Amino acid sequence: MINNLLQFNHRFLLPATFLAALSFDVAARASEIHVPQDHPTIQQAIDVAADNSEIIVAPGMYEETIDFLGKSIHLQSSDGPEETVIDASGLGGSVVTAENGEGPDTILEGFTITGGDAGSGGGMYNFAASPTVVNVIFADNSATNGGAVANESGAEPVFQNCVFENNSASNDGGALHNIFFSTATVEDSLFAGNTSSSTGGAVWNSPGTLCNTHVSGTTFCENSPDDISGTWHDGGGNDFPETCPVDIPGDLTGDGQVGGADLGILLSQWGECADPDDCPADLTGSGTVGGADLGILLSNWTT
Image: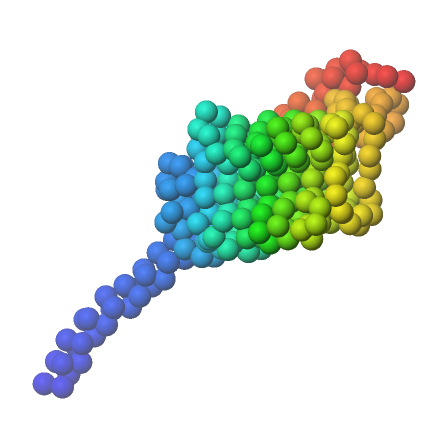
């Protein structure tokens, strides 16, 4: 009788063990959400995501606005900002919103943010929120204040390796607008061709409300009517050229010219790229350095 009972219980232990393992696997996979494979829109993925989830977005154009809803999640593209665009053209409002206490663990990474049109923060609006923004291009957004980004009420976002280009404000802060005790940190970024009708073509910090912007390793060029208005902290390594640097195909040395040194680099990498992700002479992106790449370099020869 005892043996029979043990055998009876054993038959039910195996399924229980299997279900426990299955539950663990489902939970693990649930922390990683793919768009559009699992959900067709980015906002739908955010809606179902739990804290500490990772949302990975495939290349494409996503015509929507999104709200982080106070969640500590890592929203990132799989292939970078040039391939993954969130476009709110014609939708009205900020493209990205963080207004529910989001902190540094709320991360936006690897997107182009464009087409926003709002009262505050055409590209992104942070109200009492401090998200982390990495490798994001804010381009062609508009607002009354903060064409690209508006930070309000103690917001303290961090921007790393970002581009703010051709954003506009009908009042202050063509790209970045800080008000009511807000402080933004900007590192290794570019502000190019942003405009405001008042002050702070690139960055505007409200006077008298303890606002600040900490800036390091960042280039400001061709912003109008000025680059920065209000109090800001210079962390070093910032550059304010009169004209924006031009990306010349074939300029492998980064000196603004194409010449013998660039040709030498190309010839030294001739053939199949050992690492396609680190092969600057592969100007065509084919994975091989060859005649087509040489043709591009020679067509841009300047010295």
